[in-house]
Amino acid sequence: MYEILKYEILTDNIFLMDVKAERIAKSCLPGQFVIVRSDADGERIPLTICDYSREEGTVTIVFQIVGAGTKILSELKEGDYIQDIAGPLGRPSELTELPEDELAEKKILFVAGGVGCAPVYPQVKWLKENGVEADVIIGAKTKSLIILEDMMKDVAGNVYITTDDGSYGASGMVTGMIEKLVNDGNKYDVCIAIGPMIMMKFVCKLTKELGLPTIVSLNPIMVDGTGMCGACRVTVDGEVKFACVDGPEFDGHKVDFDQAMKRQQIYKTAEGRAYLAAKEGKTHHGGCGNCGGDK
Image 1 (tube, rainbow, N blue to C red):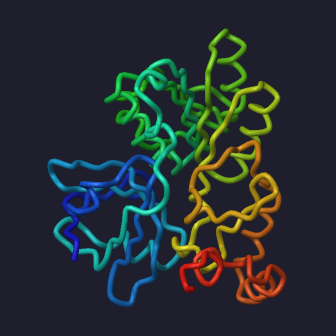
Image 2 (cartoon, rainbow, N blue to C red):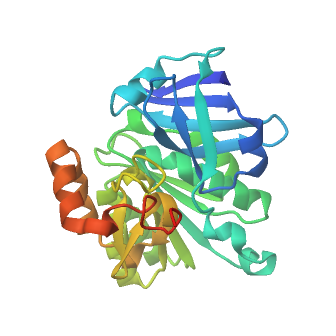
């Protein structure tokens, strides 16, 4: 059992929790995720680690209500206990593997859309702790959906806000801000985009035209978190990958976003899942009979 030490409502349906999970806090790195089960009968929910404290033995999770599982999780409060938290899972951000001298020379731009701020924050914070101040674009449909702004400003070099309706920050999409920054003479070595699939698709379309290498995190399409359900199956550079096992980060210019988004829609129904399993055969799963772990 894992105690909830802090509970905060960020927006109408986005929540933040600090949870006591010492073993996970000791070893996790930016880019990784955990699987949460609110009670003994609860569903498994993969959630990106938003922050962690090795000293206090806590991890921070941020989640949006999208179904029954996250609705039940949101009803827990400070002092309550989460049944299970497994992790850290997934591959850490590539940035954490760079030599210090190479990292120090990097000029990095992050693009966070909506709840995508949660996985962006620990990477920006880790960079700050290692002497690198990254620029961050935060985008949302409207002002009330902007999250973690103050936390991000504490660790980023510059933070740029955009809203689709112009209610806060610059009016328009995050792609418009990327274009503006580049046109103003800012030079970046890499862009890291995390948010809705449609946002990441158009960010990658633009950055490819700009010649700006781009990494995306495909955690939005994860369901099971172990590769066994087939939900996060994606084609990257012509090869079948699974976001939860092989990622969640990939070269954004090599991801087939149209196929991934089409699969998302099909996967929503039992009939759709059965169709995909029949169509994709042995490549439908990434952790059950396909990885070799059962041999």
